[in-house]
Image 1 (cartoon, one colour):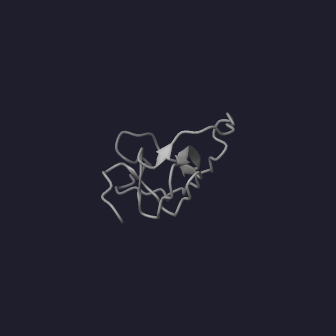
Image 2 (cartoon, rainbow, N blue to C red; image 1 turned 135 degrees about the horizontal axis):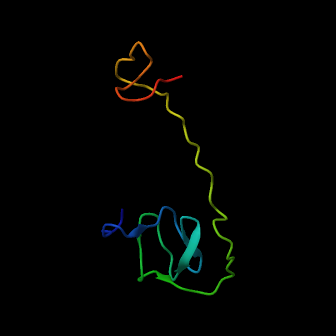
Length: 92
């Protein structure tokens, strides 16, 4: 890193040329007012708002999350009548 970046602030993950849009999570958050090197702090000293075409579609860049179904486990004793744990109805 070339300079100290306060906790929670943005850091350039690649070089950004002056005038180029700066994106965070795929969304334009401003435009570089000067060249920004990889590792630089991205903030008001090198970022400004500008005009650009906006698309107001909701969640167009969202990608589905692949969930994994964990195996069902039970650390206990299954009773002879099928109840597990105590006080539940019998399992099928």
